[in-house]
Image 1 (cartoon, rainbow, N blue to C red):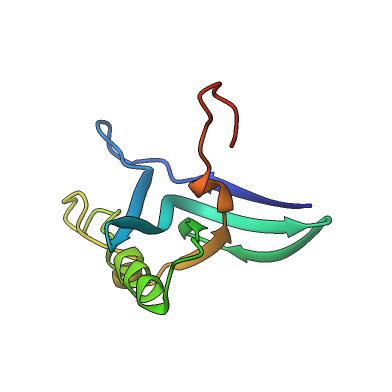
Image 2 (cartoon, one colour; image 1 turned 30 degrees about the vertical axis):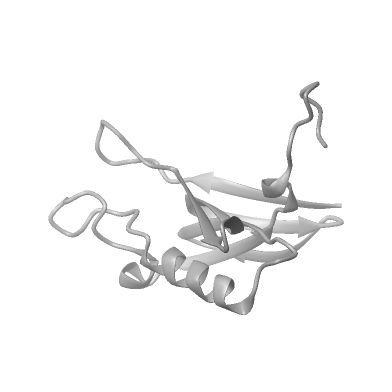
Length: 125
């Protein structure tokens, strides 16, 4: 059994704070690859009690792949993830810096349930 764990970043300023961002790419009228992003102080993936991957400060990305996703979809999601501005700049301006600008880490975790649907009885399909 695999599990992931994260320590969320705590904003330095009061007010609105974005922890999660959802990217859903579209092609041919349908939704393709999905990403849910979370700013973290640290994150790790554990499989059968062994840590298989871990990062320090950065972004934990839950990735939902679809059977119709193509290499182009993956490349576009990577561009968006690395460009997503989730941190303030040096002068305190909110939402000005991304992962690349800050030199932070990214942990990708497969999450097929991002494509899950509920039936009319509100049960997983």
